[in-house]
Length: 237
Image (cartoon, rainbow, N blue to C red; front, side, top):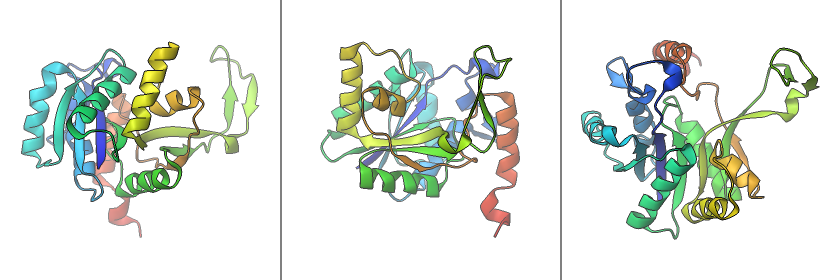
């Protein structure tokens, strides 16, 4: 089975809104519903697990019913960190579906514009190499800086890639990674691909997209609203 974990347990402090960003409505639909629909509509996805704030669990089930997300399988309590939330989702998958032969696709609940092509390429890369993380190349000139004011070193942009989600692994492999992190005392990592890298695993790239951005600020929300009205596949040949 191909099972998605959508992480939606953040409080959204950077958005400065009264409710978490993943539940903000755009065109009468919450952001998390757009994300669920992207995976609902992909033919290779079998089930969706959402990890979220406990008080929002019933709301998520209601959204799934309202927007015809039939693949929603479970809504699981989030943890104190992103790493802990993913682990909670993994344990729920292990309990319900088992480990053998199952693939997990980890995706940010507030990346609602993930395309069919990005999901498909993530799965294809995983099938070939055993893991995948969606990335996009850096196109700007890149500098490093200690204080955020003075440039110290120019870094060749050809060697730099910005990671996104989805991240794809076998359920067994990602459970192993979380167990190893606990055993080795690794701190909370920014993403599953970072955890794998710290554990000495190879990290393989699949194709991401500039449209597949993460909504974390009001500016991101404004861009999302605009892109809903001008989706590339509707007007560019």
